[in-house]
Image (cartoon, rainbow, N blue to C red; front, side, top):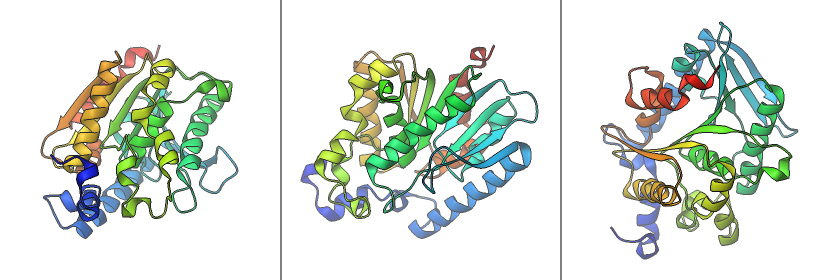
Length: 285
């Protein structure tokens, strides 16, 4: 495959337009279906759990948490990188896991530095509010996977806290931001090369090794993600593996960039089962 530096702007934008790679439906329709699926799943989760909605973790409008608490006594907490997408809580609530969906200020209101800072501070807030938790896990999809990887690569000494993140679930993410600098994706972000480099998880693996060496990282990618999305996941996985970290790669058949995460409402879905294995409920004594 042609290296991204040799691609035309049009081809690079096509590679980083996930909706154009779905085999199920048109680009517009797959996005509409995705929004509908997440909304329906979130409503279902809210019907199953006790909820604390729009809990502030900072002063900005977007700095809110949605907390999904099992109606039975909770055993632990899973910290998710989704906001208004509590659908992921559906199979977890039944296992007694608390799920926290994290909000942040998306572009253009939020720039990349701010968004990364916000998700890091959300973790600090969760730990401070739920000091009794016995296991912290993070999950993110697409842009959320990038932010979750940035959380793993945090120098926590700046926050006077050392969270014990035991598992991370990164789904169809981008781990090197340089290729998107000249695409439409960067128009609202307005990243410079310097900003892109300091917010690229692929550049921060030494810090991840220092901060999250005990974490089991799952890098998942859809069969019908674009070649560039697939390459990003495969290369990030290899970098973590070569660094001696506990990492697995899940190449999920018969899925696209959207269905790969939508199916997490199903307890029998392959990635849901992998997620349960990573949670490994023996952590919750």
